[in-house]
Image (cartoon, rainbow, N blue to C red; front, side, top):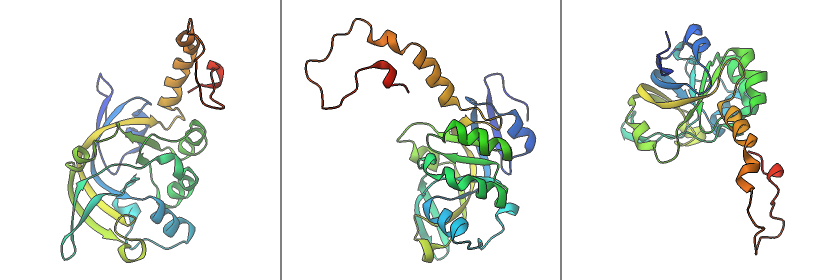
Length: 224
């Protein structure tokens, strides 16, 4: 898919290699198609305890969403999602090599991203990207993009919130490309620019009259 002039992409899962290669840190993505959720419970159950998923994840999609959907069973075997918000992705960096190597995941959607080292060492090796949701309080808006819940697995083993959900999305977004397949981190690039001017923020400021014990006041120690 060709990039839009404003670097927005409307992608459909499974994501192609050309789509992945075209994404750059800082781009905006609107995502459609099937995805599966995975967070603490699924990662441990599937990658640490080596329980095979009850479905062929590779055949379904190559996009994984780090989320505990706010939804439930509305009829026997039928589920609905009202709100969809990601959880902090940095907690799951240790699972990324197995997730990508064993299940062919090429796109991970989470919150706030991971370290630049993880992108350089793991995501670049597997040709994968990391997307982050935008800000807080958008769960209900993202939830509207859930076209349907395909199925929910491992409910008895993990509970409804930690279960493996499979969903079909319709234009979920906006999502920010935080880490691209070239090993670049949007947040790391932005923080580097902020840190270049950090001393200017302190220029002319007087020391605080009161401060907490151990509170740091040196700009060089407060780098983003």
